[in-house]
Image 1 (cartoon, rainbow, N blue to C red):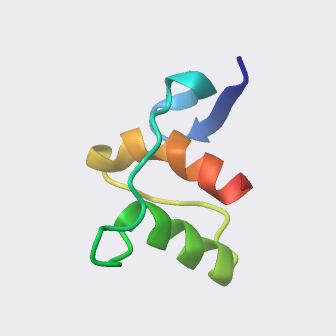
Image 2: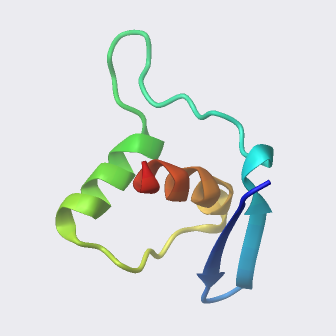
Length: 70
């Protein structure tokens, strides 16, 4: 199983098995784009290389790395 890894400035090196990451909902039934996708698109468009996030969004990191790579 492929591993998703990143360096967290507070928590240190982080990693998770790709198979452990569930498929996130990206767009609501009404067409509204959710945070998980919108933030990746914004970061890519703006050339963001480092992200500061609250502890409540740390769990989104692996899914967002996969979306960015896609």
